[in-house]
Amino acid sequence: MLLTLTNRQRNILKVLLKTSRPINSIELAGLLNVTPRQVVYSMPAIRDWLRQHDIHLSMLAGNSYAITISGPQAQALLQEIDSHANTQIVLSMSQRQQLLAMFLLIKAGPFTFSKVEEILQVSRMTVFKDLDDIGAWFTQEGITLVRKPHFGVQAVCTEKTRRQTIAKLIWGETPFSRDPITEVTHADGLVFDLKGYARLIPMLEFVNTFVSQINMRRTVTLVTKAEEQLGGRFTDDAVLHLAFMFALMANRVRGGNHLEVAEETVSELMPMHIWAVADSIAQHLKRDSAYSWTTVETAGIAMELLAAQRNEILPGELAQNLVFELDLGCIMAYMSDALNIPKIKDDQILQNGLLNHILPACYRQRYDLWSPEMSTKIEFHEQTDLETDIARGVVDLVREKTSLHLNENDLNTLVMLTKAAYIRNRSHLEHVIIVCPSGIATAQLLVARLNARFPYLNSLEVVSVRDLTAAMVLSADLILTTVPLAQQYASNPKVIRVHPLLMPEDIEAITRFLS
Image 1 (cartoon, rainbow, N blue to C red):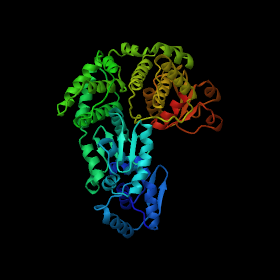
Image 2: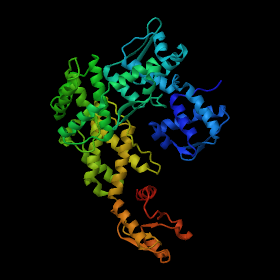
Image 3: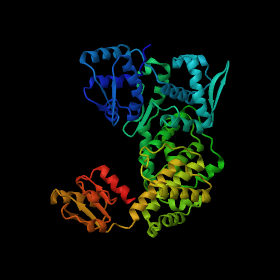
Image 4: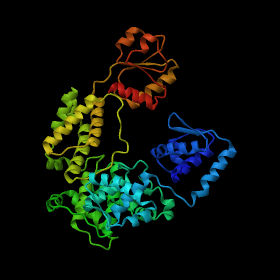
């Protein structure tokens, strides 16, 4: 029996068949308006499908792919793919489970199993298997998945949990989001990848209708106005998350679904400056709603604003952090001692970074709010044991003062802040040798780029390969060379070979050395 490809896999295969050269996942993603991750996840199924047609898919270095095939063979396969493209869509298990979870969270239930079969167009056995996986995740999220004969299936939870779980689905942060069905971008807002096939399956039509009602363009504007009112800036990731949560809030309130917020929490929020900003957003959102907006919805907006990570300190943040009894001076003194660099305790950039991250993280813990992982989360390849230990120490200090525990995502950011502070405040290298045999123009270009990227590298000395001596190598703190050096020098850990134009990999190598 021949394997069946999903719509995304068909589209990727069509590009490969029409391309006479190797093509990588990033280029494929750009051509098809999907993510490189989605391309990579699709390739094993495409390889197996081609194998059944006695055709080999070459998977090359750098996530590049190529098919060696004659023109007539490629044309025949394209015709086979297109013969069912307009009448058939095959969902992957990942896509199917995301769609079903979204349906259960958005639409009021219960739903009979036959109804789920009908709208998803799969067998009852497949529905039961999908519900097993979804139910396990729901339990982790504090959602009860009720499944009873003659009753059907229903997701039971608080409105706050429902909204946050929908957001996790949208961001692809679930155990079954291997093949994400949605994407959130600054350019296009919320995008449903399967929109073009909505008419083929009722479940797709339902989710497409929901996505079309999430007006993020409007709420991004509201977030921007909130930044102006607050006198600061949120991170780009935070702006997208806030815009989505406010658009989702408007959608849920239109359906008569409201948050439940404890009175003491509302009383805590109302005296804050953030309350007036939250109320302004609520007034704009409720203009499109025939339902009344309650004070708790304004409280929900205020909590999301407080929990959003900033790029710039909001006025009054230093005073507001007293609500958690945080002592940033104590934290910075601890980091200074741990790194053995006294001036770190007075590093204003570090203080701002800690405040911009720790305070929102504390609010997220206090109000039990979720936020997406950073889109540019860094996985460190070099040894960072010291920075990680220091970051964990900061987490411990925060817990001691606030009883709040920062998560692994917060820890990653603290590691980056620690590493940046170390690089920024460590003793400047007093003697850096540049070995460049290509003439004064090339040497000056390299020195100029080094000065721009690493202004704290002092005493840059340009020497020729012929003039480099063992004494020079011994006296230098760092040696950057554009050509291979003699063996007795090349193995020295202070020697780094770079391109005259100082490429990104060179900058990374120098940064690794400095840190």
